[in-house]
Image: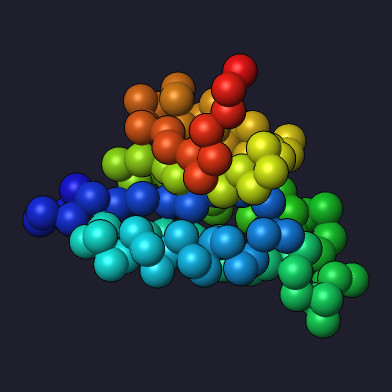
Length: 108
């Protein structure tokens, strides 16, 4: 926390750009500091050919550093979807004792 504000990092597939923006607004209005992805590589078609494997590794590492700065993560798991990168972020958050919340709760 910084002051009275909880820090929350959004995680999930960047193909859910609209959901990221909606949740970011909602959590901010609730009085949280929200850290999101810096790049919607699955939604921004103008950059689809510029994401090299090295850049993808950098993005994944940067997102873990965002988790380091956070009190918790909020997983955008629309329709229950959680990809491999997001699974790794959830595991990392749990290993570093962060709270993990989800957009959609599963019945599993």
